[in-house]
Image (tube, rainbow, N blue to C red; front, top):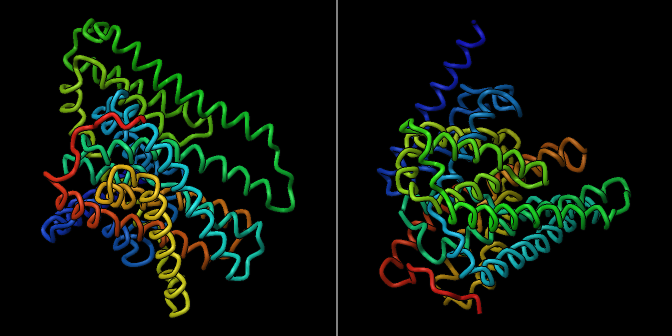
Amino acid sequence: MHHASEILFTLFVVFVAAQIGGEIAQRLKLPGVVGEIAAGCAIGPSLLGWITPEQIATGTPLDVLAELGVILLLFAVGLETRLEDLKKVGKVAFTVGVVGVLVPFGMGSVWAHGNGLDWDRSLFVAAAFVATSAGITARVLQELNALQRIESKVILGAAVIDDVLAMLLLGVVVSLQGGGNIDAAHLLAVLAGAVGFIAVIGWGGTRVMRWNSSWLDKPLGPHSPLMIVLALCLGLAWLSTRFGLAAIIGAFLAGMIASETRQQHTLEKQTQPLLALLTPFFFVVTGSKVDLHELASAEALWMLAVVTAIAIVSKLVGGWLGSLSLGTRSATIIGFGMVPRGEVGIVVATLGLAAGVFDNRVYAIIVAMSLLTAMVTPPVLAWLLKRSAGTGPVEVPDVRG
């Protein structure tokens, strides 16, 4: 009972901190997500210590709530995303996803090798530069009611491709540690499984739902359709992890399937209270995972500044080059939308530390870089979107070429 009481108090502290941080950020004309991440840094182990490393470890109640929060966030984003719209920007999204992986991976590996790591370990460090955190950008786009813009569709489509490529790169660099050989057949099988999962669920699921969604109306409860699609969300989130993908990919696909139903707008309204309750946990926990003590030296801060600059510039350049066909203004928005690393970089850093690929300081720098990109992007992206309001392409034209 005492343990349950402690958990409830921790949830109370995290939730209140998120609300205070979000309110301060909005009063400063910044997206609320910036304040929530900053609140996590403040109450985390590095500063106030109101939440401890043990409380945010993998599998703890707080970690599970954070994971559930980002799953629901991507489900809600999927609810506002139609497959037909993604198909229209498919060519651009694919280019952004590929170029947006190659440029950061190349720049990250060169930086790591230049700092004394051998090439095998440098490639592992570079993997932390690769994958975009869709949760951060999706929250900003949702706050600004910008999910129907063409840039948003490209970012979301590219994030799916980004996740598949990041998974493959991680498999390669893990195989290289300790002089291991790359199992090309295994990697190809993993790639085929991931692509097949996305294609079958995304394309097949939306077609089935578009053909007949009346079965959602048969249960009599007022929230029965919501319960059914939430079950679909959790099921696909789990299934995507079985194919080596992030859980948020399955959640996004579930939302996209549900967007084809006649109850789409009702489902959007019914998910809002759940999002308000759960998504703050993800962003506060993300902020709390940085260890500021490892950065308490001029050398570490300089290295962090360089790494963060490389992370921002490489993704910005990759996204910009990949979407230049839409015009420089839209390409800049897409480039910045692909910048946040968030939880993806943290996962790679954690794997590297556990495997002895690098020390605690490099780990802290990679984690801090992931969080800084997550904090820098929202205000810049919000400014770019507001500046282009009424001038950029809001509707989704067909750019399949």
